[in-house]
Length: 260
Image 1 (cartoon, rainbow, N blue to C red):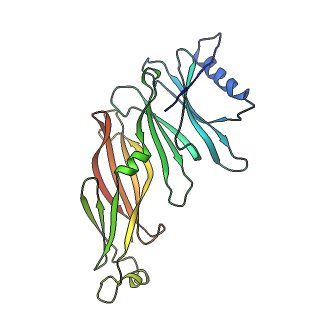
Image 2 (image 1 turned 60 degrees about the vertical axis):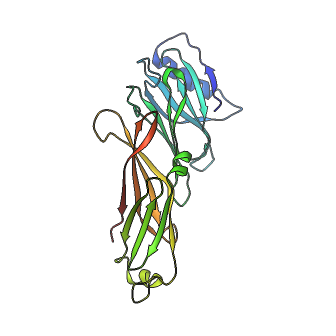
């Protein structure tokens, strides 16, 4: 991934002055009318000096839609800025969360962007910026490719969900979904009128949670289970991921169902 580097100069080495310079830099831009859409501050480079972490983008007139979303880190010690373009760089409500996901005592950068589609799909990236070097730790596209599922309706008001990644099977009881719904699918003996398959959506949420209270965050990933169509929601697959051997690995998996 190509990175772009900007050097902001100031006669004052204080963090407040560097932050002021950062805003002035973007206020002077006229060719590329980017604006800062979210901002956070913490040490992400590992030198124990707080850094400025922010996303910029081009906002659409009369719409919350933002394009060309880009990650920037301004080194708190030197004032220099490094920028990382995102592969999926357009969406809604881009946010930043800073926290330690790897256990090295330095905060990483979790970026979340809503796609705006009806499925509630989200784009998520996690970057490390140790020693001012961007390293992609989590890519939602790679996660979605790895965690695939099969959803099959079965006789007697059951839906089977199979997680192909770890070969786990789950049964969802849909017997109380309502007479009209069930009569469209099953005959009077509870047998399927015809084969029906559902699906599991890509990531619809990735949340940092410190499950064991050790100041290192794990990830809680949500994927919606749908039946005959997307609005026919059956529940969620919940995967918890933790950092191990330089990658995020599956720790636990659950299926949560909606109340009847």
